[in-house]
Image 1 (cartoon, rainbow, N blue to C red):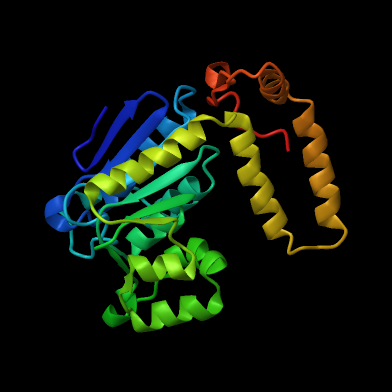
Image 2: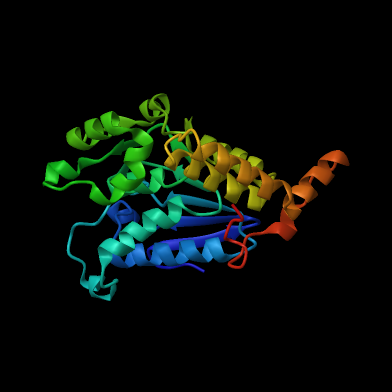
Length: 271
């Protein structure tokens, strides 16, 4: 299935979502955001999909929200702000691991998409920028996924200045997973992570994401966090997936996770 402004493809357990407005720098129109959310939910609900990759077509990854009037915006959601928030929240809270294949510069909302993914593989010529203040705007919708990860100091620096942050600087600061010298290297590094993720139990990956979010969100409470971790461990160790993985390890065999795919009926964690 593919759409005009967002493309969808699947190869094995990997679904790839491609932003497809190269002549507009993959800027996000209202209908494009709606389409992205629909396609993302399709990938999340499909039990044969275990890994989701997001990338851009052309020179840019994504140049943010399209601020020019669009004739077809009348067909977009009645509350575009809510749908845009849903795009970031659905991606960041996906129970399946997500990889941003950053093929070029990411600006504004494009930075939000990158920060919503678990892994960020970035081409060396790419950069990140949040230039909203230069237009009298603020990066409000993306702040929810960026500030908790980047911290107040860096967030204010980047958001107030609108400066370009190189891929190398992003790696140094800690919000980029890996930097690739060219497109071939970019694809190889993405595939390397796909290969690692494909070895892992789908339910375990879902629960790892939930575990980290909950422990981090509880602020390191000396009583709440240990109790939550104990509960999470107890529920995990009795799962069918854990039994399969431990049994495969004991038999010195590779686990077969094909029967443990997460579809709509299995997306909710036991944790």
